[in-house]
Image (cartoon, rainbow, N blue to C red; front, side, top):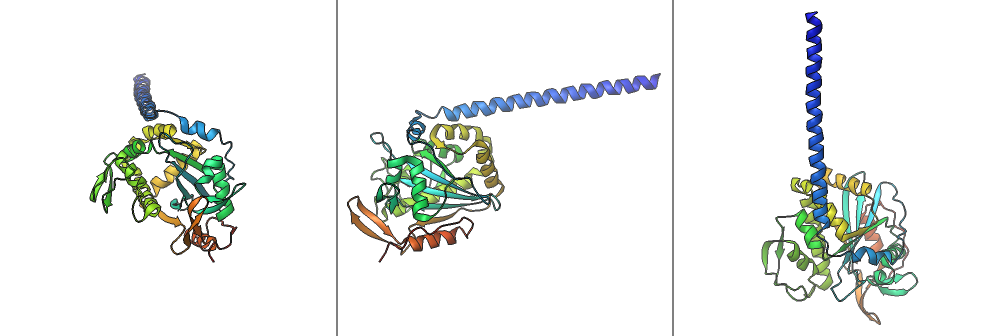
Length: 327
């Protein structure tokens, strides 16, 4: 009889412990959910307007193909319009993500590259967005470089400083070669220093020097690479809900949440890998040319497609759709 009582008492103790554990788990889950939604809403509240999403809705559906062979190409567009300007996209990059190697590669296409825009003839690359939004940019990349783009993400430069500050609250270290001030509404002095949100935006927008847009593209690639390095830190995991909220506020994309999380997990798992970068046109493959649209970069398509294929190491199929643009 006493033996049965002892068994019954042990069962009651186990049930009590189990009840306490379940209660603790429920409380922690509740606190976790509260923290997630609170931080997400804080990130979402950073936005002052939502004009970017509405603007892209006017252009119609983005018709990118489904990714193949574990390769995902995401077109990154930067909206560089000032308050009195609309419909401009002066930054164009393609992020190539390999799901097998979890490696990220970044390709920048210069905005003045002289390309065939489907339905509009030869124009500057950055005219494609103005004429037809993300979908026409996708078609233009396919037409001129034979590269399929599966998704797009457009960043409002007004939100870039806020997103950068969430990812890198202590700033990003850069080495400024000379004074930068013209056209960026601030003065950045020479030397190694840590730049925060608004300063970083000024740094990546500056182009009034001897390098012009070439220098700006190099700085954009530099900052994105360093932000990726910051994004794998512990503080970024804690700030992930706030970052997602800010992204919803300032980034228009057709990437679904599951694909975002998959890419994000891959980048975190492969934190030691640096981002490889390429600029189109590559060195010694273009010439300045004056046309009705102004000064453009008349490029050797054959050479650039060849370098693009090498850069991607054959992982993404490139179809040679252009002959050489140089005589």
